[in-house]
Image (cartoon, rainbow, N blue to C red; front, side, top):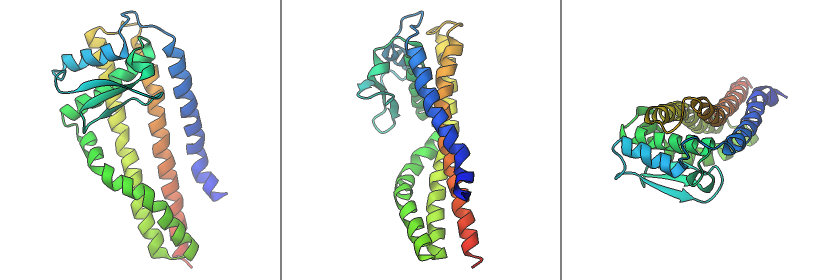
Length: 225
């Protein structure tokens, strides 16, 4: 019951965020942009505008909503639903991913920090729960504490991700508007697409924080025994 009190709000937000992303993307996938540029066109144009056309590649990748920027390969990878589509949803997502490429090029602080945290976070995300579970089962406070420290790094990663994603979306809107890739009437629609996507990151961060607070509560309770 106590766990539900901690996690339920974040869980509800998570379900809502997933629904919002899918429904918003679906809605604006049916709205064609006035300029008729595809996601690939938009990504290429923004990279060229920022002097990065020869440094960052744009490729299609299989899957739905699998769009991402790969910093190690310096490649913007766009899903099939985005790469060749000229919908508002497609160009918004494409511009967002190029926003990450611009961050990388400018050595944007939060993005640089997130990149450095990836190895630690990958280890911590796989190791923290087994260690916590073992600590709770054996009632070993030191083991629980180690698990909490590891999980804290996962929480920090989610928190650092928020400014990275919000900043990439802001860059995307500015680039689209200033280049004329979208009309003034289309800018609010792009913001809705990117705003819905941002909700998923907020939900993930809140869920991680809620779990951490619950683990801390158990840890403090175990210290009273």
